[in-house]
Amino acid sequence: MYNSVIVRLGEYMVRRTHARKFMVSKLIESISRFLRKRGYREYRIGYVEERIIIDTDKAEAVARDLSLVPGISSVAPSLSIELDMKLLIDNLIKLLEETIQPNQSFSIRIHRGIQPIDSKGLEEYLGSIIHEYFGNPVNLVNPDLEIIIEFRGDRIYLSNKVFKGIGGLPYGSEGCLVTLVSGGIDSAVASWYAMKRGAEIIPVYINLYPYWPQKAVKRAYESIELIWKHVPWDYMKAYIVHGVGNIVAKARVPDRLRCLFCKANMYRIASIISMENNCQGIVTGEAVGQVASQTLKNMYVTTTTCIQPIYRPLAFMDKIEINRLAHTLGFSKLDTSIGKCMLKPPYPQTKASQRDLEILLKALDETTSDIIELLEKAEIREYSV
Image 1 (tube, rainbow, N blue to C red):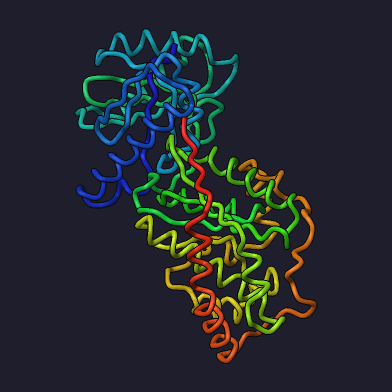
Image 2 (image 1 turned 180 degrees about the vertical axis):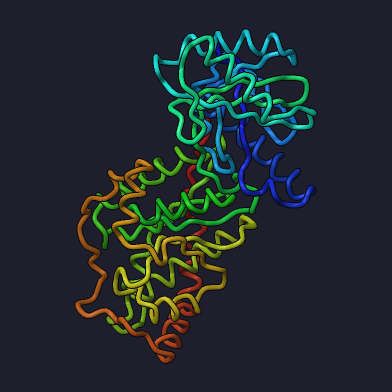
């Protein structure tokens, strides 16, 4: 019976009017591009009294898919009818005849826009009609079935199924970030967090082959494909930068600093790509203390070498928490061994000093022209539908 989808917006609905209008416009853009990406063609989108309404004959499938789009609090397949009380009662009964189970408790919740109605009184009135017609008990605290009726504009929307959204901000509303992807679950989850908070992302993979096995390169491509599935737009660009391992291997730095020099190079490359694409910084999947290069002292030093802001969504999460979220998001296949990096020294530095920072900065300066040359040859992959 559903013929529409009602989208409830996220936290930005409490913001001032101008910011809210901008966020709503970005969310409508995301929804349109996401539906095209998923192959939907026949639909109509509108904004009515703090709700985005989508008219479609595939309402339940659309609602379920839209629950994955950042900026949405919840989404419900709904029955849209004219603003008429008799139609409301008749269609409410028809809807419940197909869905309510014997002895299933229920409640009715009224949400209204500018309609001058007594919500509580109407809830009690409709509840009594349903109870009398079906015999099911009313439960206002913990019902088995919640019926939501929304008065928006000149229409009424009836819902008895709600899909919880991921919240956050509309994709692209906060600008652009470059995400450093390694092929593992950490960087994939960090990329998802950036998208959730409104950042358009540009994944960047630094290919260290032959110092990393070819298997690692293959998995990095797979990770970018998995990240692409979560992008709510119908286009994404990614960079693959080859040959960086040779620069790291030949750089004039002590062996103990090789991992930190490698990380500093990744930051430098991502920063240059960020600036070229008018982005606002870079995102990594680093978590404090997870590996030698991610101790607080080491992260302080490598961050100091970077010319762009670095955002670390997972900085204070445990690996167990990250794994759990990765499983939920469909990134679990990335959690497999791919071998070891042959550039890693036997005893990597864990407590970098000011003197170490000076060594890294000098080495970065000496290899600038080599990095620029690699960036000019970088592989750019475009994902679209």
